[in-house]
Length: 318
Image (cartoon, rainbow, N blue to C red; front, side):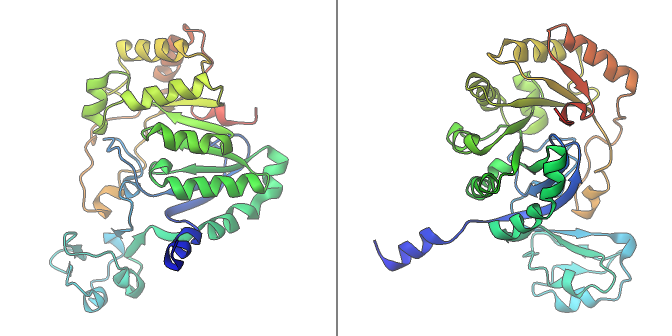
């Protein structure tokens, strides 16, 4: 083994993080710190964190803050910026996401979303609230994006948490090779497992990927007795038809250790992020389901003798 090979093997893993939220109360039991990792293999039409989809950093443009001063144009090394509209516009094919424009912008109209962090840096943030975890039964949650898209980094973070006695939750869509899931499950106290649709054709159409691997991984976790909460974002007109809900209930009830289901009503809070990334939101006319609709869906699923809650209630102290 050469010296350079040994050096590569001893370098601690790093990962791209786009947000860390402290005092989260809907991402697992108790008070938690949620670490959002960038990268996701799915392209759900309703995604409320579109900045999470690409693994690398991305440039946000907040048009209402732009003063049209031209500072960003002068520092951009590739000429990817222009002022031919009401605010700065970005040629994203030319943008290298170096962040020079965001650093120079005096009005913070530009922001580079996503930064490279070490395990120690993330744990420095997570460890700040250990007293709150101890009092509330909380801990750290790793979300995204899809945290399994950065398997080496995620595994190292989970190990670090367990060494420090911190409860761990992984919020995942389950779309990863079983070898990745199997590697992290010993250090994961709870999986928040996001199911989109049971219909394979609809799933592929609305998320861009098959659900076969997702369902198979959930079956394996259940067979092994892992702690799981199935989470379902209810999207009107997408996955709330009776046939789809019945398929969901039958599938979850058929698992060896049927997990509880937490229903999350669709919301529109992420819509403003799309123009900041130069993208179009595809569900512009979809309205969130009302309380009565969510209650009816929960009642339907309870017919399968499953514990069902609405809106994160299943993530409280248990």
